[in-house]
Length: 161
Image 1 (cartoon, rainbow, N blue to C red):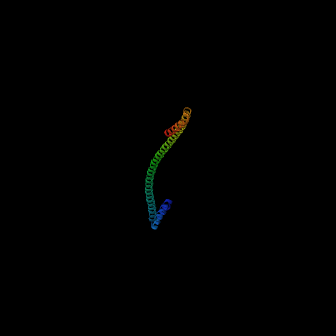
Image 2 (image 1 turned 135 degrees about the vertical axis):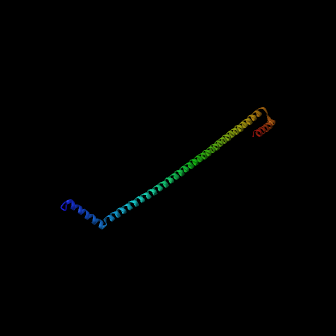
Image 3 (image 1 turned 120 degrees about the vertical axis):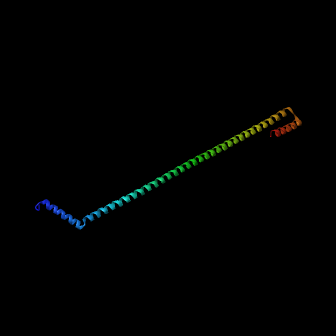
């Protein structure tokens, strides 16, 4: 048995195990594993915290987006109301302007009619006076005719004007 290689390999393994235990390798290995476990645990905690912060930040941005959309909708609605009001005002002003211009045109037409009627009356009175004068001068002779002619012309002019 002392000559067997397996026996000596076992003895070498036992000696190696005793040396490793004597040097404190298992404690160092356990300490290294504990340190690595702690580091992994810390990394997981940091990742969890970062995830929670990211979720909180996401929730905040979603809330801000909803608020901004609500504000934008309110602004759009207000702009629509303002545009409708301005359109109604513009239409009302346009109707007023058309009414004023129509009345102005009607007034000008009425004035032109009145002026034309006045000119026709003046011309008619001039013609009537001339016709009466001609008639009277043919029918009446002398001072009586001239006097009557002057009185008639005066009367016609007073009545026509």
